[in-house]
Image (cartoon, rainbow, N blue to C red; front, side, top):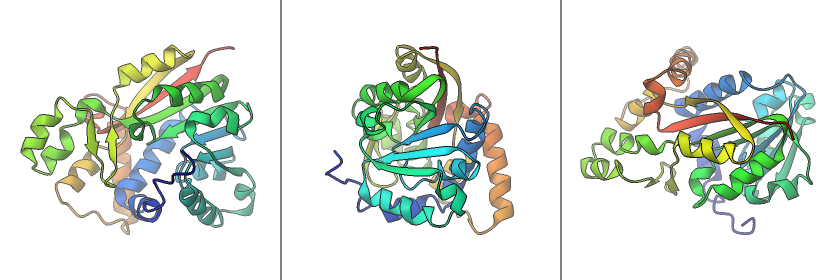
Length: 265
């Protein structure tokens, strides 16, 4: 619920820590490039459901898109507002911040329809993704894009194995839940099941991608990656983008990105 801000104590760690890391920068870059393959030209309207501090949607505002960021956490929206001040004035004018749960997205945007609806890193914190997926699909205009990033249920053993928690890794082959890197319990989905949810709501899956692979493996095996080395970060991101589009690499990503298109109304 909006009134119960689970993320209040995590906003700084998430916005200033996770996204400032090499892994965070790779995530933003890879998702941005994947999105650009499917988005219509700016200034098409984009809705970012559970958009947090705007790391994924603010670059779209800078690219000319009209962005509405919706999040239930006031702490996250405060972070978004803070980060918004760092954008050029014309990009700031293209961003609207709304406080609401994803399950009430349609009501929060007053029935407006969007050329793209994003929901990245949200479904894993929900026990049942169906209600939110329903809202995402409803908020998309006819011909609009629905973009979902969530945990990969087929790669649950990767993290505990790389952290050498062998008993946990063995158990993880048959589980969908874990306590994530932020210390919050989460669950994972499969591409196939999420695709079925989209199809049943009039959205045709177009393509799916991995998100992290090698940076994940390096981080969990204890390697230090320097976010200040921009040349190295760019080279890392280029390799991750290529891996995200290819089998078998994308299948081993702990997180996947599924993009669909809504049919005519």
